[in-house]
Length: 497
Image (cartoon, rainbow, N blue to C red; front, side):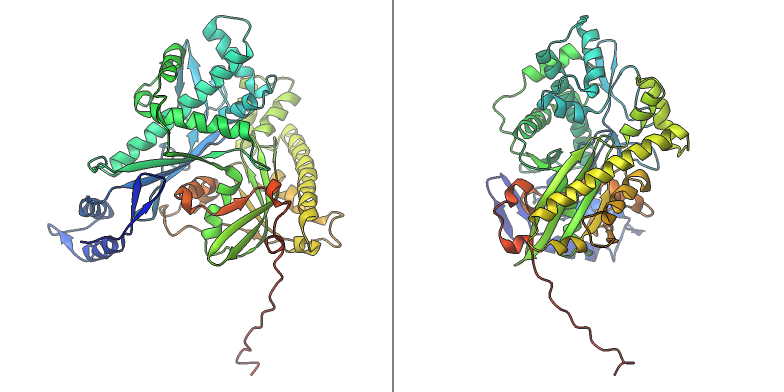
């Protein structure tokens, strides 16, 4: 069997065009194996055996979330994507808790989704890394990290350098542990992975940058990812690790590895990579609101498709600390305490849909603030438009695990009745349909809004749609900002003829 081979540089792997494999696969569907009908599992293993003269190329897309992370990995040669299932929870088995826990002098992670906050928890690790990168040493998200580091060091005072090292090491441990588990699941699915000398796994990681290239954050996250990638095999098999042992492992990792399998990509762009490939996408202007546990990420972009190329031009983007965990924080604050036990109490009340007056009060606070922020985002974008009325054609995309109608969607929709518009407009809300290449399973379409970023990251890096940051649209070409609408004529119906 002959295959067309396309060698992509500078990466050291081979992409195989798999048309002939699919033809063979279709033939297999019509036969039986030892008088037993072929199940999907048998068929998958048959397919693996057929193509073992071809190296596997698996692309991991890891959405590093504030409260929960998500992962989708893709068989690049077959262009098939699979959800990494981490939990036995039947409703949300794809969630990977982004919380670490401490016990005595040891760190560990847990798959238990029922508890987020307790006295030994290190919460919102991604946000803690961002605060460290920005040197915001007094931010509230770092309080638990200072407390636990002090207990490890048996000291009442933590230096900034030690705190930075501790948060970074926690980030490396978290990524190494989870990427190690993902690699194990991949190697279980592809039972003969590693038999071919060119079998290859790469990883794309989301990073929380929006408006421009934030070198401090990008540098930190790519270093974390490269170090974690090297340590996956060592850390994944250790249930709990002392901080001293973890520090030793990190200090002695292979400095010579260039980490070419590792790539970082902005969350704001990863979120719409799947959308631009979907059957509902069409060129135009969009407002994306992604609500997570820690932040609400907003971006206004123009989607252009020209000469077979997709381009995302971002007019404005911003990150607001108004994510769903802010609800329990404000509720606990109103309840005279922001300790972790009290926040866990209000988190459960929120998740249960409780109509406590305190919750209603803080949700209104968030709605009003997000309304102001969305109006400001629209105003910044409008300044860059050549034809200002183009903003009237905007379409809305909502995503994220923290998204709900109130306060988040309500605040965004209300912003289109303000002074920027001659009359109130009601933008269309666009949802992403189930991707044809994603193995999702029956009845699991409700998972999709939480998997957009991971799905977008599952594409090989060279196949991701090109984008321009808002800072790069100062000297942008006019056709990238405004494309005049083409008048379309509909054919008359039989009744009209």
